[in-house]
Image (cartoon, rainbow, N blue to C red; front, side):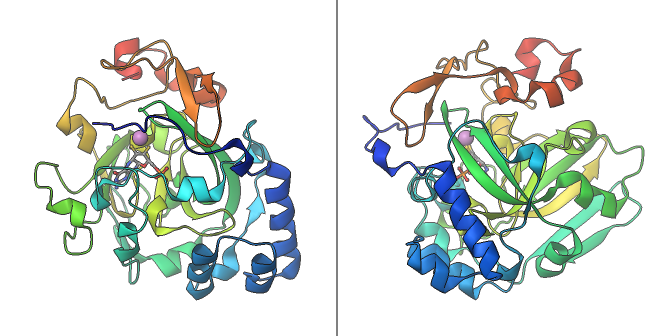
Length: 324
Ligand SMILES: Nc1nc2c(c(=O)[nH]1)N[C@H]1C(S)=C(S)[C@@H](COP(=O)(O)O)O[C@H]1N2
Ligand SMILES: [Mo]
C-alpha cells in the first residue's frame, strides 16, 4: 500500500468523542423508538449522515441491541467526523479523503450472491437480507496495516449466520469475497493497474469464528457509503485490508483465494495478515499505532488484542505466514 501520511495529525484531542456521550445519545435515540431525526438534530449529530439515514428504508433497524460481549473495546470510540473523513476505499481514489467521491456509490438495488461449494446457491436482495438476520451492535478495534487505528461502533450480524444460509459443503475450505465493479460509479476503478474487483478471502474456520462480522450499520444508523455500504466485513484481529467493503459475492471454494493486495504485492501483504507488533512490514515497523484523533502512538497488540478468541487457529503457522 503506497501511503502518503500527513506530516502531522491535525486532528485535535478535543474532537474525540467520549464513549459515554456516544452511549447517552444512543440511549436517547432508542428511547425515542425511531431514527429520531429531531432528537439527533438536537444533539447536533453530523447533518449529512443523518439525512442519509433518514432516507434509508432500513433506518428503523438502528441502533440495534448491544451484544454485551463486545460492548466496550477498551478505548474510546473514534469520533464519527474523524472516522468518516479518513478512509481507505481505493474504488474511489488511492488516498484517504474519498468520502465525497464515495457519495456516487449506488447502493440500491443491491444483490449479494452466495455460490460455489454450497447446498443453497442464492442471490439475496440486501433489503431482504438485513431483515432476515437479527442485527446487533458491537464495538470493535480496527488496525490498518499502515499503523493507524480506530474504534468503531458497528451494527450488523456475525458472518457465520450469513454463511449458514448457504449451507457450505464439507469440500469448501475458503470463502472468497468480492466487491462491486463499475468504473462509471467508482472512478478509482479506472486506474487499470489495480486488479479490480477488490477481493479477499478467509478460511472457513476464520469465517465462522464469532468475531468475523458483517457491518450494515455504524454509529447507530445505516452504514455510510465511505465505510463500505451497504455491507462490509470486519475481521478485527487482522490488518484492515482484509475487511472488504461493499460486498456483492461470497464464493465457497476449495483453493485459497488470492486477494487484491496479495496480487499487487505478495511479499508485503499475505493471506492471513494477522496483527503482530513483532513482525514488521518490509517497509515499516508494526510495533506501535497512531490512534485516529489521539495524540500519542500506542503499542500494538498481537491479534489486535483478540488473541483469546482467535490465536488457536494459527498455532501451526510460521510467524512470517500468519502475520504478513
Ligand atoms: N473494497 C474495498 N474494501 C476495503 C478497502 C478498499 O480499498 N476497497 N480498503 C481496506 C483497508 S486497507 C482498510 S484499513 C479498511 C478501511 O475501512 P474504513 O475506511 O471504514 O476505516 O477497509 C478495507 N476494505
Ligand atoms: Mo488498511
